[in-house]
Image 1 (cartoon, rainbow, N blue to C red):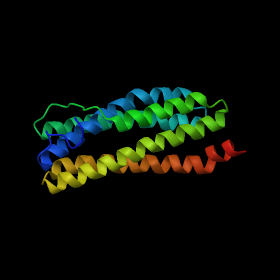
Image 2 (cartoon, one colour):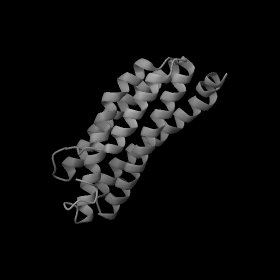
Image 3 (tube, rainbow, N blue to C red):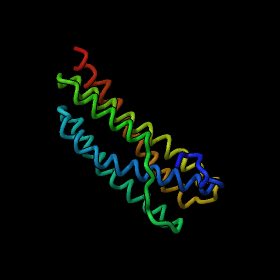
Image 4 (spheres, rainbow, N blue to C red):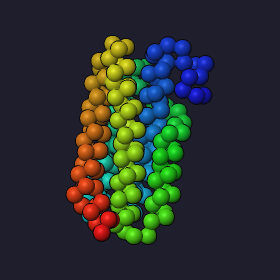
Length: 168
């Protein structure tokens, strides 16, 4: 079903569908991060990816909390966007021989994932508030803030170390 499929009639339906989308996405990210950890050569980047894997597992648990608050079973729906971002990241990382350039590519791929998550969590938190589900909005907003913080850390690491080495 596309995002505007016949099963989405009300805002609640749209909220649930998008929640299922990000649930699928987070689970795919949990599967993809170990490969990024293995490929990264910069010690700080590897540590950051390991920490983010732990955070992502927490994000999955939080989404399960939101499903529970809604009286629903956690369930994902296929997300072509995250599948594409992860596929592209894997293909690019497979094509880079220079270790410094590889690390820069990995950061770029990770930030594409973060930006997708930021968009989804921001939307979901706003919709939850609109639907008067402040309990859900609070949980979603906390994850949104963590995703933004991860993006900022990646930017700092890229700009201060990784990109500098890759460009030289």
